[in-house]
Every structure is written in C-alpha cells, then in structure tokens.
Image: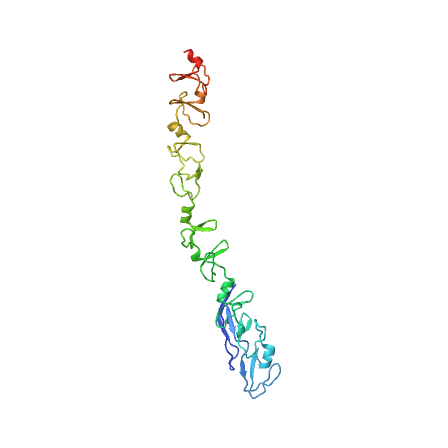
Length: 321
C-alpha cells in the first residue's frame, strides 16, 4: 500500500519553538522536537541535564525543559531512519509517521532523487520512493499495453488481471468494451455483437443467431420454434418425425399427406414400426408383408411372381387361372 505525500521542512529560527507542517491528510512533517532560544535572563538558567548556565547562550527545549546544544545532540536527538546517525540540533529534520530523516537522507530508495518538497510514496516495508519509482515498483501492469496502471487510473479487472479501461478492447472490432457485457473465447475478449457474428450458431431455417437453447439435427442447429412439421407446424423436438425432400413432418401429417399407399392394404407406407421394408414394382408399392400371392398367400418378396390386374400370384397359382 502506498501513501502519496509531499513533505516540507522548515529552517530553525532562534525565536521559534518546535514547528509542524501538514502536507496532506496522510503526512505530517516537522523540523524536530526543538528550536533554539537565546537566553537573556539575568537570573541563573541551567541545562536540564548538565546544569550548564544557559544565560546568553543558544539552547533547545525538550518537553518544555531547557537543554544545551551539546546535551540535545547527545541525549535528545532523533535517529535518522536512513543513515542511523543522530539528527543534531543544527541539522534540518524531516518527519513522517514517527520516523525521522536528515534532509539530505530523505531520498528515493531507487533513483536517490531528493524528496524534500516532492511527492513521494511510502511503502509498507518502510522504503521511501518518488512517485515515478513507486508506480513502477508496486503498481500492476496493464495486460494490453504492459504499462504501469497508476493509482486512481480507470481500469478493468477480470480473472485477477488488470487492464487500462481504454486497453480492454474487443479482439475483433478493437473498440473499448468498458462496462458493457462481453464473452470470451480462449484468452480473447469479444463484445456481444462480434462474438455472435464470429462464433454463435445460426439456425438452419431462419439463419438468425441461436443465443440459447435450440436443437441439433444432422449436424445442423435449429431454433426449437423453427424445427416444426411442414404441414401442421407442430414442434417436432422430442417427438417422432420423418424427413422428406428436405422437409420435416410429424407422423400423422406424413401418413396423410406424403406417404405412398400400399397397393395391397391401401394403408400409408410410413417406415414406422412394422412394414419398414417395401417392394416397388413399376409405379406400385407394397409393404413387404403385403406382397403375397393372391391365392395361396405365399410371400413373393425376393421371388418370381406374376401380376394379373392389381393382384399378385406365384407362378404355380398363375397357371391355374
């Protein structure tokens, strides 16, 4: 997590007590816990630690107690977070979140750019970086252009990957998808229109896109409402039907409107159930089980036969006519 801040420092003035600046809501900066005062009092005025007389001398205050410069540097000075040395009374001190730096030590951990009065990023591990290095070091990269996605930039996240909003585009038309719905094919993203155009199945009858459902017959997709009997328009999905000259018929319509009539029993030859095999001769058709000798009822299928009018006879019975 980063905090973007601008840090400031103030130069000590002998007449000022500890000063503090606030650069934004995340960062507070001060010049340290002390400033110099010059003692002009006539009565005795001593250092809290060494009891040196401070009359007419520079001194600092620590917790409202007067401290000589020497004791301040030795006992009270904060330690620089970078060089680990005390920040003396004469040095400029920068403070951020209870950590302290010499002004010259407050630099980017990557490019060493001085960051006093500059925006910076404070990482969770304590490193201080300029805004540019901080973005490169910790921000995610766009899967489209592979550039850093800076904090606050508009972006799209999908399956733990991130894109700039303008880089999240349809693989076909190259237009930004934005907040619109989209579909995927492998690693590619498509807007709805391009996905339908490129990959969606189209009904064999109406040629429109089948967005959901549908049925498949002989490796062709159909809308359920398009796969109907050619005569009565009854839906055929889940029912028995037959095809004739690229048209589909329910059983009843096929029997009454399409099927040939048996020259023997005069019933439709449908191919459903008994009577699947047929016998054709010239312009006539029979169920195989109806193709029998008129007189002795012997089946004539696959045998020599004699026709007399509309009747069939075996050779023996034909001789007796």
